[in-house]
Image (tube, rainbow, N blue to C red; front, side, top):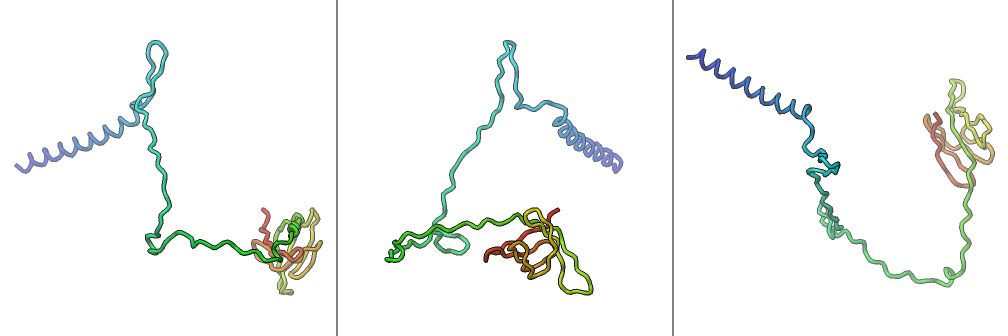
Length: 160
């Protein structure tokens, strides 16, 4: 009796695995069902095209996590002073020179690191506080430097 039950269970397991392998194998060896069919007169007709469902999300009136209104408070129109009615000069845009940072060297004798810097296609060696072509080196990091030019600051990253 026990031998017959084992044989029956082995047959069931082989049948289940056979069905699984069949389903997987048919995906790779059969053409997809939504392929284009060509009729005898040369006209093609797509089969099984699924159209996209489109919708629009509206902004929420209340934040569900903070339980607060998400609408910004309305501001009253700003009052103009006599000073603000004057024509203001447009801000002059400062043109930065092209700056490239190529790395730094730090020796045991001096605490300040020396960097290799290219300003307007001219190579320079500089340390913190040095001014090169009106560009002052403020901070030196391993992967970047902080510089000032005409009272404006920027950070330049290491060129590779």
